[in-house]
Image (cartoon, rainbow, N blue to C red; front, side, top):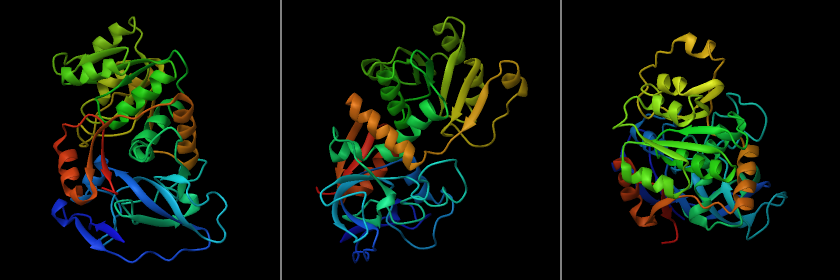
Length: 339
């Protein structure tokens, strides 16, 4: 089979297309013919050597992927031939509370991922894809989709009618906007670009804030919520946004930290910002297979379509990386493995 290989820290120049033998099929394994894969910022971080605990040898990158079950081991019970499946971000985290052991391995970072014609792994490492989505759309759920679901409805415990602030128009925020709208939440989303805010409003955002023209954007959020603040913030910024996010949060509200795109040098938080308003600060990392299965059911029932910016053919994977790294996308960058 054809597969891309990349060693952590080798940079985009290290991404190489190679011919690799198919992996042996174990009793409980399935072989999946990959139809589409999708990129995440963590994949660029892996290329730069900035992702945790990488192996010292090249692996197949990317965690997001969707494909068809082409072969099954003799003990497989969860899937049959022809089923369409997606990868579970942390294959060892099936359900229950997070632990170091459950999150020590993820596809495309510690073990071979989805930028290949096929992937072979335990049946427990996959989830049935939503029936309403094609392969390209379904491939976007494993990382950004599951993170958004966890932030909103698991860690964030949002209820219909709750208000939520989404920082920026990255893929977690766009997924969260889609999910929040379907669940009846009041959504405020920020960006530095008015054209992206216009597109967010077209997607159903209740209100938008340009943080470049409104540097004290937390005050505008408070105004938009009748001086109450939001019930929940999906915080992707980190160092340069966290203090403002806490100020924008209502008494008893929650800030769920899912990223650090604005910096990771260490945010200074005044304890009183949490104590005085009885606010919660929670960190998450994607979620379990059970979390992903909840997302799939919600997407199926509500016929949710993720936002896809563009698709690259398999032979132009390096160009897809470069496009994502440029940061001008609005939605997921997908690679069509069959093209």
